[in-house]
Length: 107
Length: 115
Image (cartoon, rainbow over all chains, first blue to last red):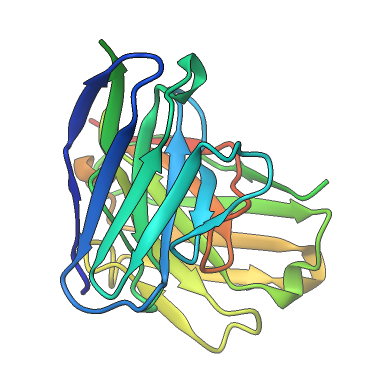
């Protein structure tokens, strides 16, 4: 199975900060990398797909980049509604795997 | 509106069985691969199983292989997960999700395995 490793596992930041979350795959997955945002008690929401395409409904302060094994999710200027847990997921293999998640908390 | 609604969760004893259902509406269910994803309390997301649009291809996570069975009924726009030999570590919220990029999720159904 392809292992997905996210870092950091948790992050404290302030409104207005620029934040970057990384995700590393144990083998090349081309650009088959997706990011999800999950708030407590809710199902996850697709945020970024194919490494860098922003899902409809999310603001442009969210961006994704990378290919192969290394990927990043960047939030350019944190807003109060962005405090949540973020997961990466590879859809390269039929055996889908997620990163362990990054919990973004208010400093 | 594209929608998925799970049902069938509950409390079951270790070794017991449960069958989850997921009802789809608002999209062409028969055109999509479907998945089950779970989340244990306070933990991250774990993909459980997927089934191709015509049921030709089925995949399982190693943690459930041999105990869980995924199936679908395209005529009824429904996805199922038969869970046998349940263990405490299967306790989780179970979500159904569409395609390989999970753009559509259900609200989840809770499975608790405890004596």
